[in-house]
Structures are given as structure tokens and as C-alpha cells.
Image (cartoon, rainbow, N blue to C red):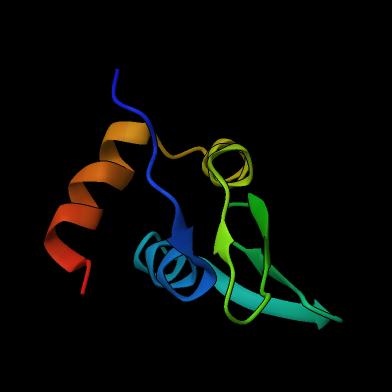
Length: 79
């Protein structure tokens, strides 16, 4: 299994929106997303910093998205 890349918060937000998540609220630098089926995920947004592999993995777990789904989407959408 390949290692997850470090990505910025904006890219992770785009991925969550692609999966059907919608921004539900924000508290400071953390944006909370909710899916219509009840899943939720939180993305910390710190300008100029990438999300580490651990937090990226946690967000994918919370969103119930596979690493491979994320990596495939990333190949198509990374700018």
C-alpha cells in the first residue's frame, strides 16, 4: 500500500464535497462537514500548511472513504 501524500486543506475539502459532504459549521480554523447519511468529518484549515498523513488518514476514516478512492481522485484533480 502506498503512503498517503501530504495535501492542503482546500484539496481535502474538494474531495469531501465530491463525496457529497456539505459544510455544516466552522469553529476557529476547523471546518465541520456532514453527509446526508450522517457521516461527519472535520478539516483543520491552517493557511500555508499541508495536512499530515495522520490527519489525512483520520479524515478518510471519518468520511468512510478508502485510501485508494482518495488516491484515484487525487490523480485526476490535483493541480
